[in-house]
Image (cartoon, rainbow, N blue to C red; front, side, top):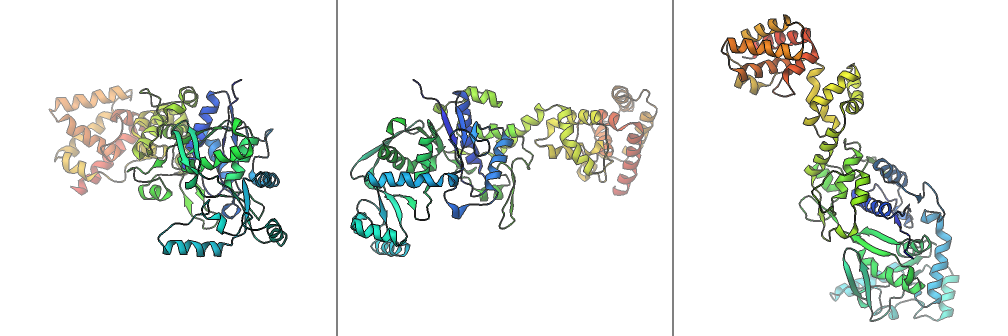
Length: 510
């Protein structure tokens, strides 16, 4: 019988969720939904020293905003809970003890200071120290101490850790959906710590135990976990769970825009783009890190941006709804090589979603900014304006710069346009055009346009020169949609007023 697909996204609450983590969550979600499977959110908070208040809530809020939904998890519950590792603390000791009883793990009583001394002595000989099959028999652990000595140290509350006993001289095979067959010799691996005397497991033990107990079928995670995969395979073998071991897929890294190294928060700060899905405020320092949501990106755009960082559909289609992504997604089309983050492409995706929104939808998003500026406007009229300028923007916050002239007369006039277009007789002709507009009835876009064009042609004037100067006094610069649509929108009286004001002020500048 085919195994039911169950995948998990298992972040640590150590700070804001990097977009690389969001991509991992997205790929898990797409895979689960395509296979009719289950998506789980598990919080891996075994490292209490790195726990950051508010991080768990931040993770849930960010993924909810993006439309990545969970069937089971810390915030929705489910039959395999609890879904927070600190709430599962008692069961990990039981599994650590099982490994000891089977001879797959041992107690290590070495102090951090003694291990540091050993490391320094190795470095002095230009060698690297690791706690492994070649060194463990000369260190202070239950392999070198008698059973009685080890038990007495435990009884005396001597600090200890439980380490995995990596076997000698074995080739460990990791079959990965993206990397293929990966073989690592056990002699290269150290005896990783699985359990600490404070009662908390390390990531490695908790991860394997939880994946097994939650019946995870596929582990889809970042490339940085590939070096840990051989240990995880060995843990499944040690527990006798090889037959139900999940399948692995290790995703490529997200790289800096220049391709040199992993994308970091510093890169975002330096180049002016977010690396977190939503804004984050550090509870200790108060430092605020920007997020895609607060920077004006639509959730759908962020999903498209991330989907294409390491995966392609094999077609020319670039814009996908979540349902379309679910249908098109496949692990086989994920790249092995790292994916460079393209800032301009990210903006392009958002621009496409701005254009897909109706003027009515954009007006609802733009209205709060206008109210903040003390501008009152009918929503239906604002929707028309948004439709006129939406092709010119990538973000809602750019709508004002492309439409301010619909709401207020210009305060300044572009000096470059004045220098290039303004002639001695321009003021006279614009004043005549103001009279023409005043006498145009009915005052609508086409009649106003036709009457002004007729005047320009009858006086053998330069069409481009006059029209650019007319736009200058109406708008303040050589920007904006169709000029007579703007004139019709602001109304006859306002148009005439702006022309006369512009002529008077530009006369002072020339």
